[in-house]
Length: 342
Image (tube, rainbow, N blue to C red; front, side):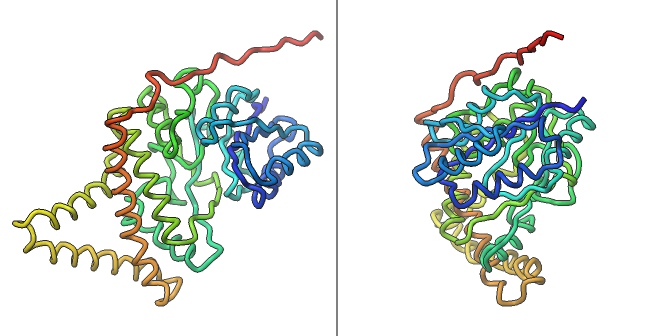
């Protein structure tokens, strides 16, 4: 018998996207009666709740849960507490899901025995800048060779995009950290690994997301990512891999070259080497876009590295002084079995 699935979706001011996302859930080829859709709304100030109420009238599987904290991580925790499914599939509004997304997640969980499964974080572009960003994100210089960014990768990994979880995960290791502003998925996945659990990346699980559409938006996003990574490091004491530390080491290395007089003679050569390496990589990954895209792709690399590294540094300084995480993660109780009279 196929397991019941809870779709857990955080949302805030998503009036332009929520209807299309719910439609993609309704188009899933998994048995309709085995899916419930829970949306944690962070007290939207637009028409998001109005749209959700209208959709729920036509489809009673859809339920809206109030998320007063507004953070995604807090909202996801509220949804898991109300979930009736044996499997929790975490979804984001700004993404497009293949019609077999839910079914493939369930089948991959059963086939691998993993505690969490997911697909690659496939970027999809609507604007010229997004196309340039998608090209940059294909490079190891941008993402440090992260497997969850590769559509061809398959196997056990340290994290995946979004994720589909066995309910028992939240009974044993706890919910998402409700105070996490970013990096909540990677933090939860690290706790899964630390507890002896497994995470599996499948190339058959297909979802696309839409990346930021400007350098300014990208810089703000990766600065927040860096702060979130620093918080996770201080909270858990380590990372599964050294990959998240690379931008921080690059930024501190560049600052050292500029601030330490004995190193000034080698600074020009070091910065020139960085410029040549990122420039050559920009040319390589821009081949399908044409020469006009190279300057934009080239500019994306330092924005990714500098903003993430600076965010990590400020996060370390902030959370060393003001740690804000609970001593123990909140857990849910075992699922209650309801016996029905025959």
